[in-house]
Amino acid sequence: MKSYKSLILTAALGLMLTGCGDDSGSNAPADEPKSSSSVEKTAKSSSSVKKENKSSSSSAKVSSSSAKSSSSSSKKEEKSSSSVKEEQKYVISFMMDASQFVGVTTLSADQSKVVKNFVEAPNSGSVAYFDGSVYILATDNAMNSTLSRYEVKDGKMADKPVATAKFTGTNAIVMKIVDKNKMYVEHSFGDGITALDPKTLKTTANIDLSSYLEEGAMTTVPCSAVIRDGKMYVALLQLVDPNAMIVGPRGSVAVIDVKTDKVEKIINEDLTAAVGYLDDMNNTGAFVDENGDIYFYSDASLGVAEGQKEGFVRIKKGETEFDKDWVFHLNDAEYNGKKTNSNYLMSGGAYLGNGEFLGFFGSFEDRTNYNNYEWEFVVINLYKKTIKKLDLSPTIPWFAPSIHLDADGKSAVLGHADKKGGAIYRYDIASGKVKKEMDVTTGTAYYIVPVQD
Image (cartoon, rainbow, N blue to C red; front, side, top):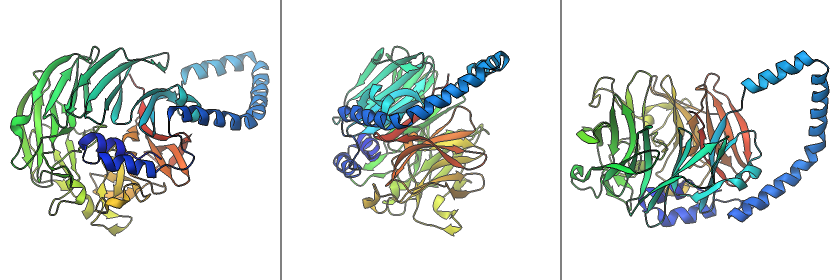
């Protein structure tokens, strides 16, 4: 299966460019498609398999139809009920080799069929949905990025974008949509942020962050960001050593006035190393809870920098500085009833509410485990400072972009794969149970974004 590493670490830094391509290839099952033509072949194969169940399905429909015709009032009720309850649609991308295929579908659809009609985009890029449009921000190996907006009409994503914007050599892979009038694109190698009109994708302002580069760092790397009370809080990773993936030893965040696009100040904390993720295309290294508190997470250079501390820190509601009295180091928490000092939260996940965050738990200290099935989906409770494992088999850690809180606010959707195959699952927040929603036989589920206006 395709490694998340090929998008995340490849696009974010370039430092993993060579390794990403190699690892992702070695990670693919023998029967996984390698190109868009393979997608169609697999879809046809899946269709022929489905013919076996066609007759029984047809019989069921005939029987159901007869039951409906026996009562006109029953028929009206049935029709009324179906019109009210429309199945939730999602913007989903599936990773295959060097591409991701993006489109709008339901989770009950035949994945191998619908994917052949999806739009092909480079695998190095992020996907978002907002105000009737799908946004794809993709980066090539030269770190040139293209932002494209595709309109969605009648539940279908257009084949071609209605607007595009290009960025040269800055490795722009993180976008943050503010509202119908403004969005931001962050340049991890450009020491800056671009403000754009979400409709036309024309640049409205440029925010220069180069003057905030700290001693010993090569670039500021703006990344994980949240917006609260008219201000955007953007983590600045302060990249020190791209080859070893070492970032700054303390948390650094730029506070930007969204109305004026001006940096008001830089705030710092030393309870953890640099906060935010190098390639946080889901913007989940930072979030605002229902109390109005902002949380940032630090992975402490993925555990390779001696002396750096990982963990969550916060900025309380009404404050614009870090809370110096609160920190949650994940490796201090009990996990499955035991203490652990070697695990880290993978980049990506989703805040579920009530202090709970759905993400990954594992370790990067052994760099050979990128594509081993050793990582666990977990729910981290920031209020209680606990960690619990989901009832899913171990997986690789590159499914981070797939995790999203669903439109109902009661569940989360996520992509998963092990040696037996891939699927999309739903996690029910109240019960803590997980159930399969879609088999993924063609490629790997990458983004699963609920269509929500």
